[in-house]
Length: 79
Image (tube, rainbow, N blue to C red):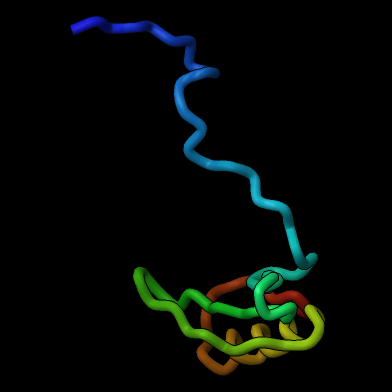
């Protein structure tokens, strides 16, 4: 077997920076639907789908309302 030594910077990129599609926490643009999507992670392996929204501010407010309702320790978009 041949072992090639590669400098750390060239090994593997495990995390690629994603293009932000919203300025709000927990909100992303679903390009296929053309709407903003909210998924809220409530615990290890637990995700709550809150729906699709026409604009990112409405989506962010829905996320904040659910965070408050579930009393989760997560930062809010509109404190």
